[in-house]
Amino acid sequence: MSLSQDQLKQQVAEAAVAYIREFFTADAVIGVGTGSTADKFIDALAPYKDQFKGTVASSERTAARLQAHGIRVFELNEIDSMPVYVDGADEVNPKLQMIKGGGGALTREKIVASVAERFVCIVDDSKWVTHLGRFKIPLEVIQMAKHAVTNQLKALGASEVVERSGFITDNGHPILDVAGFQLADAAALEQQINQIPGVVTCGLFALRPASVVLMAAPQGVKVITA
Ligand code: 5RP
Image (tube, rainbow, N blue to C red; front, side, top):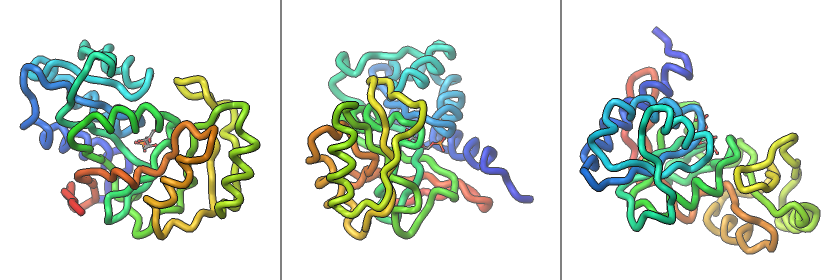
């Protein structure tokens, strides 16, 4: 029996809750990502809401869904540590480096993930790639820097830079979707892009890859470490 992508996302969301249950304690705050897989994770997490202290959300969308379930949402500024952050990805490679930001929440995702001790990436098998780069790299940028950033990206090797139409992030900035980069050294490229004035966040998550990937495939959910 073949499973739809939606069913695979459901499976990995449930597996993620089982995987992080060891971190449920009265003072544990869980970081929660954004997207359709993260939404399913939130729904699967809800029955356990009394077994941990609360969550930090990586977007307004995620905060609203958590609160609709009666799960407590803290501001990141109230939190010193977090045992685990759980989020989807648009692509992930065998080094557990990711491209994220298809949903436009990359900045808050990277910030919340940076506070967590572990990043648990939850994907269906369509997201697994040998080499990153099929998915365009999203960049959150300052509005007045769009043109200057575009020119610098092209100088670094980008072939196409397109502003995401009709989209503004939770932080009030546009997104540029960038194609054509040579991604043999994704961490070095992330560092180069981070240094362009006007770039708020780069959707490459390579300098700090996931700690573990849970990947749903028709045969079941695989636990992958680098
Ligand atoms: C949002 C993200 C998402 O994790 C990514 O786009 C995957 O989304 P989905 O689970 O809907 O396939 O980075 O900014």
